[in-house]
Length: 227
Length: 325
Ligand SMILES: Nc1ncnc2c1ncn2[C@@H]1O[C@H](COP(=O)(O)OP(=O)(O)OP(=O)(O)O)[C@@H](O)[C@H]1O
Ligand SMILES: [Mg+2]
Image (cartoon, rainbow over all chains, first blue to last red; front, side, top):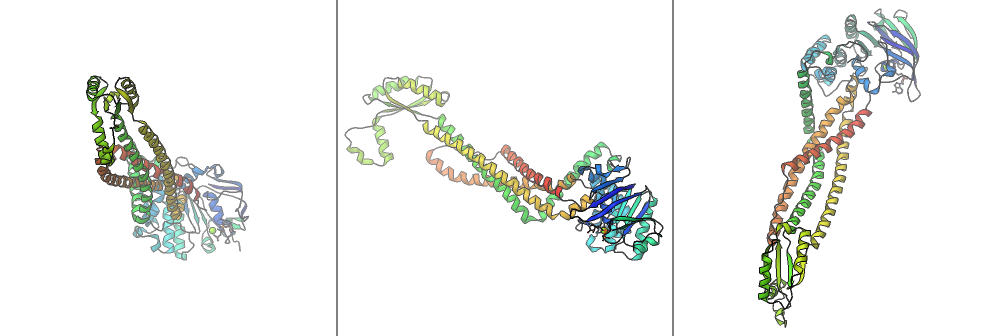
């Protein structure tokens, strides 16, 4: 599903964020990406969502080389990837409903479909009673969940999450992870970047570890650890 | 269609009839258009300023254009009524003059003939010049008898009238014949220069309008930067993001055009009043042809075009520049 081939990324300032990263996350797999702050986790996800392009190497999704994607096609690629962001990236002036409906409106769904799917997505993250609220009036955790609802509302085959449990308490974090597990068992490939080693330790998922831009371990969480 | 996942269900692959799709397209555009209008309403002051700039920039050339057009029409009237003055030889007496008039009346190029005897000429000059009694001291009446010839409308064009003049000059009693259309030709020259100036001025103003609208839209785009970033992140195309701004440009154009129409109409009514008084003195019939439906439609189309062009140029450049990093 996600394949990196000898990928290096150097930012314009000369900061080497990733060097020779090589891995493959299979279709239908759920995997974690971890590493210290500044290790390059967000950068790696940005290469998948085409917010950045690699300097060297290839990134492939479902066998398609992202290097061949033209500027005009980027929008369509992003519709296939559900993304959850470290900073929630919600429209602060729009209601929860409008935020979650955005990907569907962009794709041009009928009103009926939009209402049905937004409702289902909000139900899933437990925010059905907040449909009309503005995101500013929600707690950090609730905002995060709005972001998750928006990411899954158009049922993408691939879900990327950057620090989805960043400001949630352990109990809520676990709930969110359970949610991802549900999506995963419905066939969605899930790739989650997180600091939260305690959370990873409690589960037996494949964990990729970055250190200073290099992939140092790629295996089950028991063997993992970058400290 | 999904680029990465063959066969993935998306909006376009759902079973929606052509009719339904067609209807949705218009419903979407209508809703977005109304939304953009609502956006203008929420910032009334800024919107009014932009609409005002657009309105006045169209008012000025439109008014000038209408003035030039009308002047042209009036002068055409004058030229149609062109008059040929025949100054008769001073030894021609009134009876001979009447005989000439009798002959001329039968010419089919001539509509009417009027005789001004030397005595009448003197009296009229006395009256108009205000010299009054001073002229009584002249030994001799210096005014020759004059015959005023009005050609039929068919022979009133400059060329035909000139031919007629040549023919009239051959009459025995005629000393000098004059067809005074030179000043008209000069006026025409001036009018065509005025027209060129109006075109030039319009072009410059329209150019300025496009820049101003472009800049206003640019500010709108920048103030929505965060929103645009989010939309791009969840897969909005540039075209989708640009659309509301294009609608804003459209509304600026339409409202600016309507405003220009109202101002031009007011200006014309006002000018009409002062012209009326003036024209009555000269007994010239002048109806200012103001804005008919055609002109209104043209003005609105022009204005909408300028609004759209300004916003189009702006979104092309600035929506592109905002990229999530
Ligand atoms: N836009 C950018 N321009 C220049 N350097 C950047 C940019 N974004 C990230 N970097 C640098 O690249 C390196 C990796 O950053 P990245 O955001 O991928 O780290 P991270 O693993 O996500 O960290 P954190 O856990 O704190 O979110 C850092 O050293 C950072 O300073
Ligand atoms: Mg990060």
